[in-house]
Length: 138
Image 1 (spheres, rainbow, N blue to C red):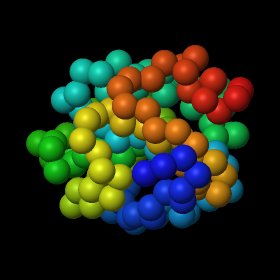
Image 2: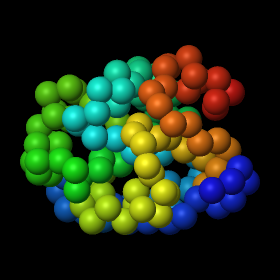
Image 3: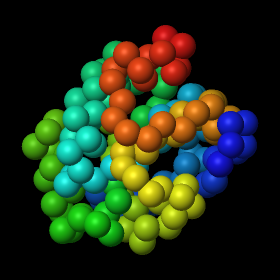
């Protein structure tokens, strides 16, 4: 996927089984992140996401897509999110189709999207708070 392309739409579910689509988040810049609980670099960046969400969550969406097909269970992911007090939205890619649509090969992989869901940048590897701020021009 190239800069300027519209990000592919996909469906994922929240912990209550409600479906969401990426297109539901149109209107604000968005950080789309693919991650797993067993991934050390993912664990490193999650507190950075939380800090960014606490400070800028009204201006920018964070959508964290868990690669649920690689996890023990959806319940395990839910417990992980609760234990780590992650308040930003986490959704489950239970069938792996979202990761497939984004050609995710390594995690964490993050996509920075504009308010029209066009790709600004793709970042493979963990992000810091400062990097996230810089990529959104905050």
